[in-house]
Structure formats: structure tokens, C-alpha cells
Image (cartoon, rainbow, N blue to C red):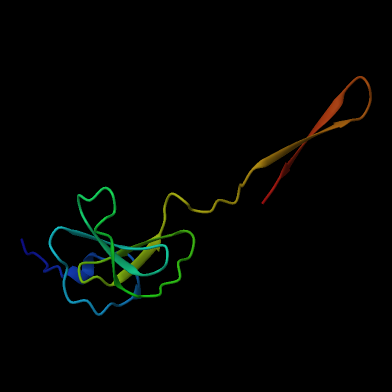
Length: 112
């Protein structure tokens, strides 16, 4: 049996959005892309955000429907959010039309 050598770059399932200038991660730190589009770091066990610090101004403009994450080299990737996938069926509006005093017709309109 032979094994294929796997590179770290093969593990990224997303689309490269931005490259950073940071060379390595610090131990015990959590890295994430903030809502402002910049790369932030925080101590893993810090619950009150006292160690929150901006690492680099990346300037990524977020689009809805994607999850953004930094990889091992802290480059920013994105992939479609499977939970927020748009569906063609957005809702249903029910309208009752009274045609006579003895019966009514139920009409469904699909709003898309």
C-alpha cells in the first residue's frame, strides 16, 4: 500500500480571500476575522475579552452566506455556510377570498 503525501495547503476547503504578512501563530492564542474585516487574536481561555488585540488590518469585505477563517499560516479563507444556504421557498402567504356566504376559496401565494 502506498501513501500520498498531504500538504497543509491541501487541507483548505475554502477559497483564498486575503494573504497576511504574519509569519506564525502564538501558542495559546485564538485567531479570527472580525466583523470589521481585520484579523484579531485573543487568548483561548479569556472570557472577558481583555486580551483582544487586532493583529493586522486585512480589510476583507464580508459577504453574507460565507464563513471566514484563518488557516495555519493566518491567510484568510472562506467557504459557503451550509446552514444559511438560500432556498427557493422563502415562505407562504395565505389569503382567504370570500366568494359567497356559504363557502370560501383558499389561495396560496408563494413569495420568493
